[in-house]
Image 1 (cartoon, each protein chain N blue to C red):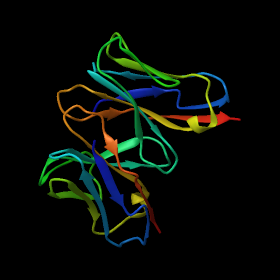
Image 2 (image 1 turned 90 degrees about the vertical axis):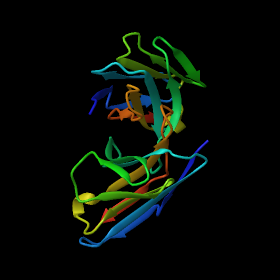
Image 3 (image 1 turned 45 degrees about the vertical axis):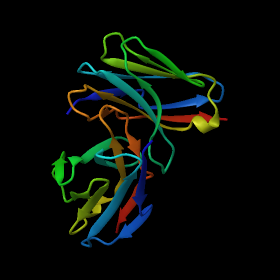
Image 4 (image 1 turned 180 degrees about the vertical axis):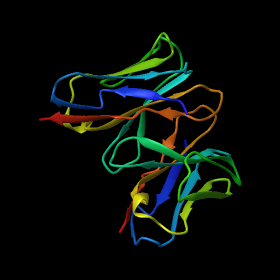
Length: 111
Length: 111
């Protein structure tokens, strides 16, 4: 079964600073990869998903971008963070119609 | 994207009580999943359902795939304090690999 490694667990960044969150997957190849944001411990908002290297689909226009430089690596970035970017960021993966496996999340606070 | 309505939004129950929550969709789904998210963690898969009418148990948890394929139900019997968390439903139409998530049910168990 697949395992997702996501880091860092918590991050405090000033407004206007850049962001890079990394997610790597073990135990599977050619997974679908997803970035979600969760505000106030509630619903999951899909930000980006990728079905292969270099293939990124954006669900919501925003201040963030995603990249997939390797098959099992998914990166969430921002050039200049906004206060509204604060939240709990989750990386997830799946194969075909298998259920998602989630990472342990990154708590981002923009100050 | 697909809309999944999950209810209730939150529940406060006494330890030992049974819990019921449901999820409805505007579209027919071929797979339903139920996840639990502990505070500060990523969601973890509880039960997966692949067939209309299917009833599946995982310990004190029982989930059902609705006959109409537009809904699913999760029941927790004899709740205990560690059942606290947010429960998410997720569904897939199988036209893609993507799952759509409900808005979550926040469960609080009072000892």
